Image 1 (tube, rainbow over the protein chains, first blue to last red):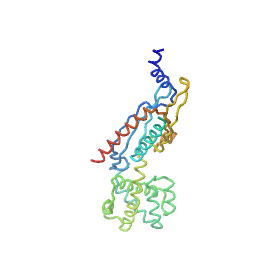
Image 2: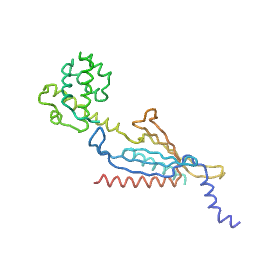
Image 3: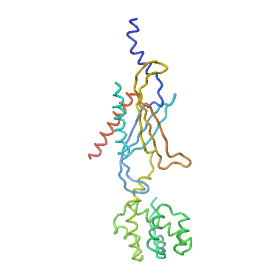
Image 4: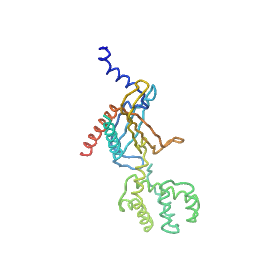
Length: 91
Length: 195
């Protein structure tokens, strides 16, 4: 019985950890910089942010690439903070 | 692409003297900026009573000129007037310069939003669920977050979809890690902005 008591917490965590997750986000990479010029405009100067999300699909992973303007980035950050606050309501 | 404006282009531009009105000049300038199409050449030929071949050259030369002005960001009358040869019809030169200056801000905004890019994040929605059971644990109470990202490709390849949607699931730990990463981006951005 005592062995069960010792390991119960770890076993529960493992079992919970095996719960199905759909399209689990496993990694996020980013880079940002300034667009210097384009084929249409010699001098530009706007900031861009590129994100790569690594998503687990079944046994393999898929990379999702996207670009955000600064306002979109701040919106993303704001929404994720709200999601976190919502999660914390449950604990 | 911005080609250089040649003497031949300016010769073609003098065909604008055949335009029925100043508005007609304005229309053909604005439309040729987007695309010097054959249809535009045909409507211009009939509006100006000139041969279709000449109208096509006019539309092409206008396209070259407006893109040259856009590329080098020529934003003052003096800069644009300086492009024209000495012999060019003076009032027409002033009218063309005025039209180019009026439209430049719009053209620049359009060029920036049309520039090549990875798919742009357009919409972000999320929901937080409480997982109460699964095939491995009958009773549990673990929050999880679903985030849906809608992305739009500004220049999709032929036959490709322009809007794509990805839904990802985040555990609490993943969400914390993401917030950590986003916070670092925000700090790095404010360092860059401060410079």
